[in-house]
Image (tube, rainbow, N blue to C red; front, side, top):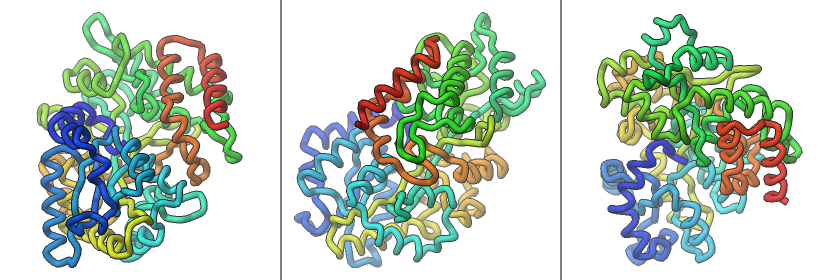
Length: 439
């Protein structure tokens, strides 16, 4: 997902904008570019918030001033994207291009519906060396084809109160041991203080939180032969450790709302959350922003981070003219002031994948970003190269992981160990379910 921690906002907007479109038959109005009655090139975006749509409209208007083509923007609520893509694929009404995350890119790429030629053309025009290596790796298929153009992304890590850690003599929460020690030390439920928030609901947030623990010890869902290895000893150890942290979390099922609220309310001084938290902290108090530090990775045997990319996907089903318009618009948006305008829609949540932009004064000249300082922004930028996801093995995509995520099987395992079930029993059971799904 592009922004899993913005669920409350997205659901609110859907009631006002997206729900009306869906009720009116969203799929039917999403033609593939030049087949539309107005001749516009159709662009789907998961940025459904009104303020973000205004920015995208501005970018489109700026592009159309000097371009031959026109663009019709269609907002699609992120949770509905898989269904809408499936319906549009079946009816032949896919858009010419769209901005969405890795899962949808992966699914479309596995069906050979993305124009790798268009993606390569845009990247070469901008400069391949400009893009973060980690972002390019995630956008590349197992056959070595670039499926889409990385646009921006968020990373997940531990956000923590530096003063609380200093007073307790705690190290930054980057290793299993330092995380456990901090959770134990800071936990004081009698005084409404909790040591840590670990995602324990059966949703993507729990999987996202758990992924770097597993990967830091080398645990995978698939091995290099694309066989399920969720029941490996390493995965059992990761699940067991994660479950042990749950005793230091607030009672009940913990969601991204729990992490956000307990941190902002100072009921927990260490939470795992995406970089979208930066805006919330900045809006809370200047003092909290100044006292919040960021640990961008988890380390055990190796370092691992979790994050998400939003990419520009250009569909191979579009006409030549529509692909040309899409390529030109994507290059326009990823250049100069336009790229800064796009990123500043959600400072901290939308982070640049272009290295020169990440280091530029123009990008950092933002009220929210300036509160966090150069070190935090640099940590976020570098974390893109440590991003790992269960759907990739040795840099190769495993499309079958989409079937596993659609059934929330990793999240199910996380929920169960968080509720106290034996890690070995859970791993064996969930691995069996995974094998049933992919076979």
